[in-house]
Image (tube, rainbow, N blue to C red; front, top):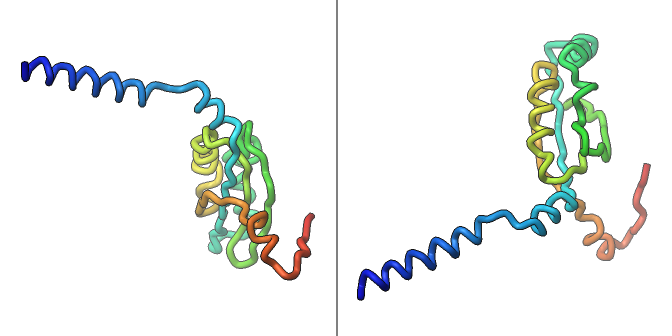
Length: 136
């Protein structure tokens, strides 16, 4: 009797866990349509001048590989004293592609820092007394 109960418990557990880990089309479709923001700091190596940095970036194919297909540039700024700050919008499934593009084509020219970000302004806007917002 104990063996029968144990066997039943094992079957229920495995069938439950197996179902929970099986891919669900609705979940994967949702992940592809939901976008995230990614902020990347490309920090200048101050031992090189701009021409040297640009030469490395061009030689490594940065402009052909970045951003990867399916990834959009939201903003691209120069941050004086740091380097460049790039904000990308992408499906979470493209995160690996962005990381590889940075590692293969930006390293050596830059040190990078990458942060997932989100837009808090829609939640804060109603609380602000001065509601003016700059848009470029």
